[in-house]
Image (cartoon, rainbow, N blue to C red; front, side, top):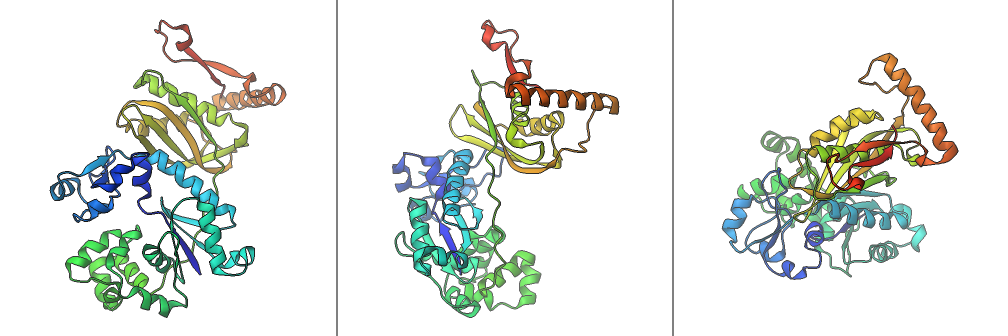
Amino acid sequence: MIVCVLVPRFELTVAAGDREELLRKPTALAPEAGREQRVGEVSPAAEAFGIHAGTPLGEALARCPSLSLVPPDPAGVADRWERLLVRLEAIGAAVEPERPGLACFGARGLLRLHGGSLERVLDATRRALRQPARLGAGPSRFCALAAATRARARRPEVVAGGEAEAAAYLAPLPVALLRGRGETASLAEPLERLGIATLGEVAALPRAAVADRFGASGMLARELACGRDGKLAPRQAPEGLAEEIELPEAWSGVQLDTALQLLVDRLLARSERRGRTLRAVVLTATLVEGGTWRERVPFRDALADPLRMRLALAQRLQLLPAPAERLCLAVERFGPPATDQRSLLDEQEAARRARLREAVEQARAAAGPDSALRVLLVDPDSRVPERRALMTPFE
């Protein structure tokens, strides 16, 4: 049995913050700067105008001229969602997050931990979340998601049985549920235009016709409508290694590159890294004009070379839509220990740096992490001496 946790309009609620009155009138998440101009999650009042997540911005404003746009807060969403996932993992759940506000986990291994019944597992899940959420359970992930959309905050929806029972439960439900899965989100609108209104009609379509018209995503939608779904892929809990810096006077240009260099040096000098390389990092910024910016940066090779990391991150930093007042760099995934890292320097220089790095590590082991620092020029023309340079870990 699969349990689905659904927090409706999670991203919109986080972005609205304390402005709860926004959720009672037509409101939508504004498109992120530099991305496709489509609105994000919308309030129930906006849905009454036919607006949903993914609607083009021009069409949304044409349908509802009084639509309020809320700046997105991707960093705040990621932080709040991570806390909820940690609470679910605290009850023993192996969680697979689909997107912020939607996660699934298997209930079979939790039955003996929580009294031997599914109702006890759902009660423990509700207590762990500490906020209103819809809970659904079913034999597949998509069936559990469908059940969660029909559930209420204190009344979970449970679909017992197997594949046949799941298909029977899904048959009368609208095809709009396909928007809950990233792979099939784009199919709901064309299916509705073709006059296919329910998942039962999708399951009844000929397999060859679906494959010819919609390709792999259409085949997946048909499988989901028939009650079949893939296995859960639980996530690996992150270690939470991050560094952040406040940017005085909304740094930009060369000063922003210097701040990035400082963050990379500090992150690589952390003892928690234990000599491991980095496969993916997350660069976030708090914008002066309000809202946040978040960019996930996977590296082609696992890196521990600060020069190569800065080259990769500097390109993403140029996508910053507005001046920032705070910059943060966090590790999302570690790689193997740094043994054969390729360098942009020649072999002799690389060998010299390797010996120097070993000496620095010995000094830190003997005298602490702040025993090897270097001067980093930040604003050499500043009238305030404290702003001209900073001390950063030597790498």
